[in-house]
Length: 136
Image (cartoon, helix red, strand yellow):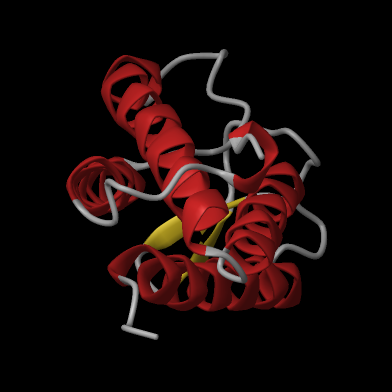
């Protein structure tokens, strides 16, 4: 069986986002759950809600990495969501609607993640359909 770029990317990104979500809880004690101000994790601002989102995305990617079709579908979906979050995040930075405590570094990471996830999800493993849509 050949190596699937979608499975590899989903596994790597899944592990990273899961670890970032867990590490975020180490720095967010005393931070409002969905506050506009977060604690700093390296150069990123995080709050508990942001940590939960990272955990959810990480686990979804890890689970999807078990099969080529699901990895491709989840990479594409999460890539599209990150593209939206990256663009919308540019307008939320100094807003009360910034419930994930996004900062400029978050926006750069979300846009870079979107480019990689969408790029691989849309161009690699094209002949493989997600398991749920396959017909016998």
